[in-house]
Each structure stands twice: as C-alpha cells, then as structure tokens.
Amino acid sequence: MTAVEVPVDAEPRTRGRVPRWADWAAQATMWCALPSGIWRILFGLGLPAGFTGSMDPRHGPWYMLPYVLALTAVSETVAFLSMGLVRPWGEVWPRWVPFLRRRRVRPLAAIIPASLGSIALMLIWTRLVFGFSSSGDPEMPHGAKAVILAACYLPLVAWGPLLAAVTVAYAIRRRRYG
View (cartoon, helix red, strand yellow):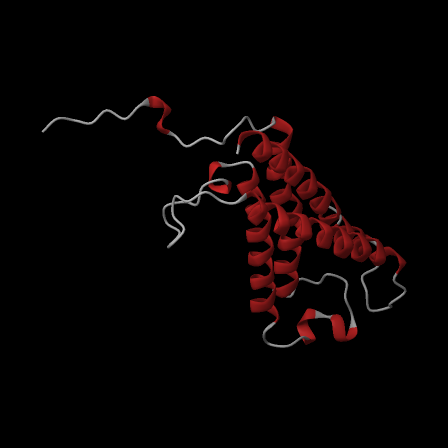
C-alpha cells in the first residue's frame, strides 16, 4: 500500500483575499459579546450587582441561572457566526452539515441575515446601553456597580457596526470572486 501525499495547499481557503481588518473585525464581534455574557452569568449566580427590590437576583425566579446561561450561549454563538464571513465555511458548507455538505453557500444566504442582524444589534444595544445612564429607576445599580454594568455592556454597541463592516467586505469579495 502506498501513502497518498496530501498537497501542502490542501487547506480550504476563501475565494479572494480577506482583508486583515475584516478578519479582525469578525473576531472582535466575539469579544464584544463576552463581557456582558460574563456579567450576566455572575448576575445569575447571585453576585451582588447593585440591583435592589424585584431586580435583585436573589429574589428572582428559579430559572434565572439557566436563562442567563442560555442567553449567553446564544449570544456567543451568534457572534461566532460572523467568523463565517471571513472563513471558508462561509462560502462552502462544512462536511458535517447534513444535506448541504460541500455545497456553495449562496452569498445572499449570508448577506441578508448578517445585514438584518447588524441593523437589529445597532437598534437594540445602542438604545439599551445608553438608556442605562438615563434610567432613574431606584432599583438599578448606582455608583461603581453601575459603571461596571455599563462597561460590560458598552462593547455591545460596537457589535452591530463591526458586523455591518464585515458583511460589506464579504459581499464585495463574493461579488468579485464568486
């Protein structure tokens, strides 16, 4: 039996060169979602985060921890999907995906959801994060705890614009190279 030589160039590559800034921006989307996820998990574990009254996690329902764990997992998974816009698996379905394996991903199948997602992220997080500071709710955190909360959620404001930029780079590259 003879050994089959695998060419050095056998690694899958994207069609056309991915701009370095787009790769960094796609990676940054995952980092944008991480601080708020960590904060949510600590909140779900009962960390005294400065909330009082009905918003205090110690007085919350039994499903608070599973809820924040699931929400954080979904957020990180969605943030990770932006990597598909700069990786080969965003152009050709991976072999482990049933029925679609090794078929080309139609550009609009990635561009439309990513565009809608970036718009939704900008609408949700910009309004929510900047609403923290203007909230006069006495049950919300104040002082240092409010600063920590804002610092953990502030990166989410960048998630939408970063995803939009990566989506535009993907659309341009796929239009040029297929």
